[in-house]
Image (cartoon, rainbow, N blue to C red):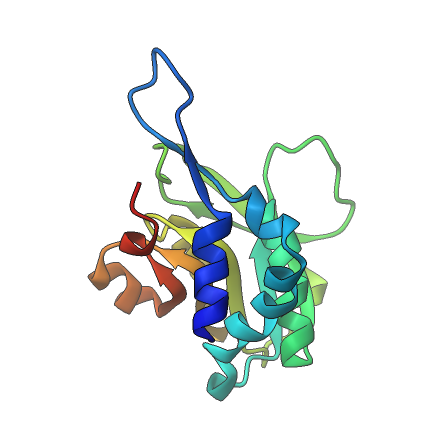
Length: 180
């Protein structure tokens, strides 16, 4: 990754104050999606984190994963598979594989699923997302795809180093790169 992309990511990111009664800041990543240069460079930069691992498919959770996943898949020359959240308003009329996602940064337990027919036994799955706070989604998707999992590429990782190592999470930025 170039220093220019890292600088652009930092510059396009904001912390926002939602106001009372909240006593915390909320991340605003919308500037990342608005910047054409960032969008152009994100796919190759995230793909580069795992190029040597030779993934054969990218799997990404909704919502921002549906934006980033295809960018990374295109850069790798592989296909993309969506990981849907259970309980969404859409019906998927195909057999699905589901996995529980341990409690996320909000404490919510979720379920993610992929269409069974879109993953082959010999696939090498790269998970892609924008942010890894606890590693919960990476862990859930690793459990879902099993031995096909090669790792998770994210824009920013703030999970503990032991979690990043366990789940093979690689990132373009670390939490201290976006200090409020």
